[in-house]
Image 1 (tube, rainbow, N blue to C red):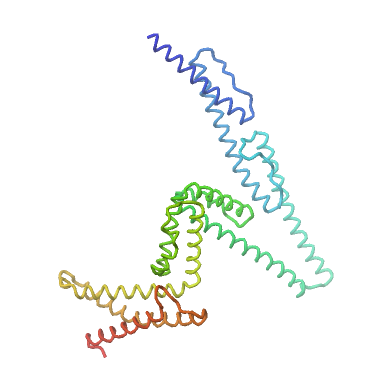
Image 2 (cartoon, rainbow, N blue to C red; image 1 turned 60 degrees about the horizontal axis):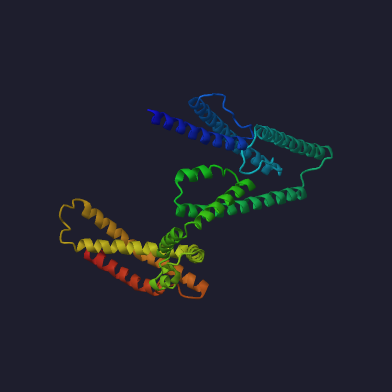
Length: 380
């Protein structure tokens, strides 16, 4: 009995010391005086300290939540007004006085925004009155100046959109490799609702964070880039010889340099696809039609073809006829596009072999196959 009581007392004392330590740290963060328990019994002191700790933690969470919300509002106004944000030390918990000053700063910015807009409208009306008073019209010269200003802002907007799209694409790629869950992605993207400098800064900050995480997982990242690289090689119809020329692909010496080599190779093949997408998609279409034709041949040679097929045979026959009509047309389109590409670039278009020769050979086969099919069906 005595042992149990002593154990209980020791546990209470340990808990009290832990609570005091945590409260001391929390009070320092909140800039409030350390909490001194008023109770006299150990279990009462423990309970009082535990309740105080919970209460002050809620205060901290509330202040940080308010700070995040207020800073978002302030930043949006600062971007519009080209104003300096109210300074609160990064990473610290703001005092209640800090939050009150921040709210006041936001109110001042909002009032100034309204004032400037009203000034703009007043000046616009004043210009209209002056023009009317002196009998002037909105001349070609005035319109030219206005159009020039409009074009300047449109160019800035287009450049900003392009910059942000590029940042989003890089972040998306890193998210995929880091296996970032969709909910986290959604919450982040909800912050990006315009094309302001603040939105650009938010994207750059996220990109830097993901880049830092990338280097903490070099091997995993390299493996995932290899998987992505293989997919793009397939899309571009790279031959085994072309793939083997990238010797770093089989290296197991995982490092920043190796990862950089893989990322460079990935960007190179992506660029190749972008520049030749119209030809590569046509090649893919032709390959798909050829595979369908071969599949129909395999079914025709299947001894069990007529068992339990019902209306499927008629549907297959219609689909095969459609493929056989499409294939020569697609090959002719591909031939023309490749010839135009070769003339423009002054060299042959290769996908492991000279595509022009491949088209010529396959075109002859598909035309011959179509004639044979028509003859077998009694078509003229």
